Amino acid sequence: MAEKKGFICDLHLHSRFSRACSKDLNLENLEKWARIKGIDVLGTGDFSHDEWLTELKEDLEDREGIFYTKTGFRFILSWEVSLIYTQDRGRKVHLIVLAPSFEVVDKINSYLDGKGRRDYDGRPIFKISCEQFTKDLKEISDAIEIIPAHIWTPWFAVFGSMSGFDSLKEAFGSQADKIHAIETGISSTPEMNLRLKGLQDKTILSFSDAHSFWPWRLGREATIFPRADSYKDIIDAIRKNEIIGTIEVNPAYGKYHYDGHRACDFSSSPVKTKELNGICPKCNKPLVIGVDNRIFELQNFDSGKEFENKVVHEVLPLHEIISVVVGVGVNSKKVWGEYDKIIENFENEFNVLLYAEKEELIKSIPEKIVDLILKNREGKIDVKPGYDGVYGEIDFDGKG
Image 1 (cartoon, one colour):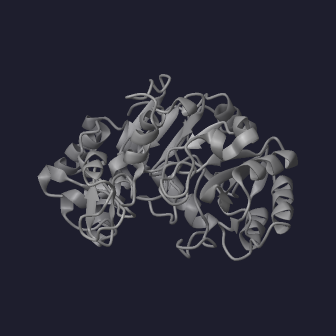
Image 2 (cartoon, helix red, strand yellow):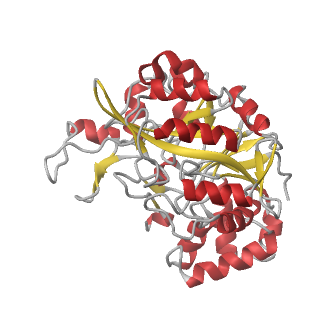
Image 3 (cartoon, one colour):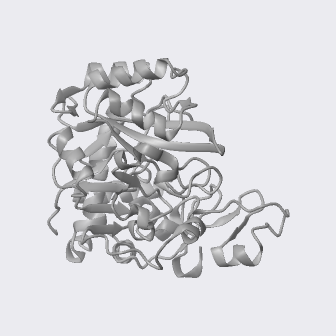
């Protein structure tokens, strides 16, 4: 098996207290499935929600800003906020917030109590600008890290086509230099982001934004850090751009890669959208402009600069691979049966997706699955692009 380097971290996810999230999202399930996936550190998510925060304080032990369960799994305090406000027009931006301690989290929550409610959802909405929010949190503690989340998705992102900005400077104003990193989101890759001059001095991070603990969601995107023994280890790597690399899915797998209309069952590439003048041919209304098109609109270069010799693994989740081979859905009994046998032999999913040699795989995994695992690792699986909230689909041998 190839040597694993660094610590795989997924720092953007949610608890059961966020809307549209699994009601079984608790620390026990997060730890269990993170270990099965092969993740070393998880974000807690939702630290603004008092019930969840109480559980975190009761069940986690602080060791230099890394929070340990009783069985030794590591978490870092994290949260996603939704800022909806007016700046020239309506803006909707999601931000990831990392915090070094419960004391700092309590101060953040006290600040939020003066701005609105936070009890109704793990990802609450506040009418605060990106600039003001960043300024206020940095006054609480400079150790707080603020990261624009899934920066290209149309509806709730700093560069989103429906409600976003054209630059970080436009969004964050005087606080733009306090933004050290961005999150790619499922529908884009580091290379795609580096086509923008304004992002070439930022650290490119990838996380899952998981709404459940299932292994085809948790850790589907992640960042590999060189060290993870303290909060400072994580923040230094982000601020100094010293990450080892990222784990990505094929960006076409994302729900907003192409333009389209979900209700009309219609999608189009940026070129096709231009031919259509941005109008859906089925309903004659404007198309939802996706990530690929939006990057094409704002890019300063034809292709991104090299990702500074960092590692980029582009792989689809193992459940998706097994599902294609056996011909049933990812959550079917048949797929789970194959998955469980594989994990029993290889300890975790990332060992299978990234590190195990072909000779090791073929000893215990059906040949068709091994072939697709290796194609997956080499980026040789085609995906029909997702659009307007519809996930992309593996196009295996042209069969979809």
